[in-house]
Image: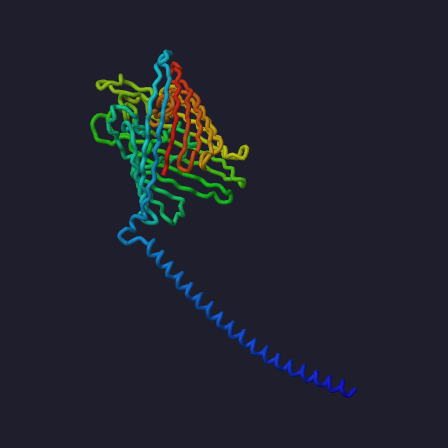
Length: 428
């Protein structure tokens, strides 16, 4: 028994000594771990500081490389844009009921524009364009004449004043400018797409309180011919226009608009043709169309237009229906009215997207000034009626193909006029 007690006492002493030793070792180990943690934290802090310094150097280098020298900062205020269109065209028509030989031609249009930002309130715009002639309603250039060099014309040159205090609601233009008047569905009943008026114009947008609608007011005065004296038949001529319409945007992104336009060509009666004295462009004129007896306007053209447009989704595709009605209040004949209705379905914008369009019009001889209306419909000018079918396909970004077909009748005899245009357009 005594031996057992002695043995147990010895074991207890040994255990106590072992625990004491282990406690000392654990304390040393904890101290070593703490020292290692401090060293790791110091290394991480140093690495973070070095990374910040590297990032700062990269940022400064990038800013230095992307910054424009003071001598070239003016270039940041200039923007270029343009397009090139190649067209194959086929025309089949009648004259006094007799079928004429078909005409096939290849044509192109090239335009390059420059926009210049003067300051926050002022911009300048310039554009050059091709054209077989100075015709105000066409920039097409035919491929012909034995590879002869082609002409380039000043298509636009204007200023745009938009005071910032009006918050983009007021624009005043001067020079040869884009058409400031709204055209429902981009129709060409009064104005051809290529017409760029010359004079002074203004556009103003006024919110209508409590309605969620906007009132748009556009107006301008333009020179058709400079007043250089001489005979009454060659004296100055001008046109003044005013337009107002209201647009309502629905919550589902549909929209509806309607308005009125009034254009007064009030001083051209008895004057020679404004661009050509050998073509009537469908209007009623006096004279024989020769040098000795040039065509003269037999009346003034004070044109009142009513128009409307509705945009909505059909089969989940953007769809537009639109219409326009015009009447010449100064017409000396009964052929004083014109109207157009049309629709577009879908929008050719993104790659592989497409668009379809259709319109029908009946434009009497003296409803509008023939020189400025659609130059493709019935060969250009008024006194015609018929259909226009169109389709577009967006091949890739900035490259689009299109087909347009006119199936119409022209002149008092109702001669058939059929025109097919196949286009490919490149934009930048």
